[in-house]
Amino acid sequence: MDAALHTAAVRTVAGAAAEGPDADEALIGPDGLVAGETPQTDELLGDDWIPLSDPDFSELEQTLVQTALGGSRLSAGPMVERFERAFADWLGRRHAVAVASGTLGTWLALRALGIGPGDEVICSPHGWHQVAQAITLAGATPVFSEIHYWTGCLDAARAEARITPRTRALLAGNVNGHPAAWDALRALAERHGLRLIEDSTEAIGSRYRGRPVGRFGDLAVFDFSQPSALCCGEGAMVVTDDDRLAIELRYLRQRSIKDRNAVAVGARVPLQAAMGELGAALGVAQLARIDGLLERRQAVERSYRQHTNSFEGIKPPYIGEGVDVVHWMVWVVHLGTRFTASARKQIVEDLAAEHIEAAPYCKPLHQQFFYQQQGWQRGDLPLAERIGDRALALPFHAHLDDDEVKFIVATLQDTATNIGAGAAIY
Image (cartoon, rainbow, N blue to C red; front, side, top):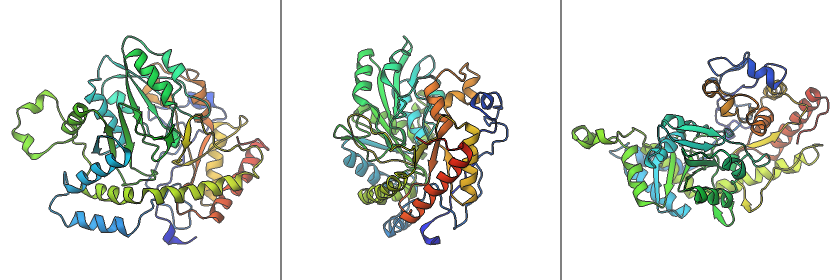
């Protein structure tokens, strides 16, 4: 493999060690790990690995980073403002506020909406980025609700059954790039007088009923950490059309030297949650190239579809009603019902033996130790649990060529057949 095509990536070897999901659940410890599970490490993959993700950078990124380095301000400078203006214009929203991460952006959004202790927010436990953690950070109570089985997104009908007098908002995500059913979610929010927060941390460029994701919530949050197609290393953007919310977001995200003598800070304590100039420089360059970035990823998608056509039992990724375009964050396959969480772990290890980085897609939040201590348990959300046990993320980035995709699929087919005794992946 050409080393120039692949940057170092962080290896994740995760999964359950027991023989079934019920046994896995019983072995979760206070560190949130299943017995025998290896936490994420800082081990760097070699150049002969096929990494799960690999940022797509060019000379433009290098030029703009050098421009930022040549300036006198690496915080709260002109590159951040440039990125915000460009992103708002590209998406067609009035305001874009650059922040340090998607989780912090969601926390700021909740605070700007006045949501905190005593309030409930309905959300999904399923997704790559654990943005729903922001609800807990804001002091509110996350109320997990079931997903649509095929899209992985929050199901509006099931969410309605979770609404109580304390419910203040819905937090719904475009999971792995697939848009949620925004018509139904908007109708639900309006019917009950709730705020609608759109989690687009896994999606950029996807479109629903003629509009890009990020246009459907009262606020929407994007994340630019790896493996996002638009990658700044770290960072995020909160977008809204509400002038008052934008002012509040900008106040809450920034701490500046002038605040040292401000009397008003104690009234609404801000966070140090801004994006820096270097990350914004990467963002400006990536956004200028976004169409090409997404097109190259679509070419990799076509390769996956071609080579999995001969993989008996596998189905193409589901595209829901009203969805125009899906730009996947990673390539996810769902193992068949004969596979357990520990079988998926073995598949990850077999792929790693061939220097292919893969990972479980998601450990549902309600199955993690912190939320189990609050009374959530396995069996509460069976659809999310079923997907959580069997979803497998494969390498997906613009540097993959057709031969590499063919090798990934063939290796997966071999190990899935051996481990599952011919069980289908679907």
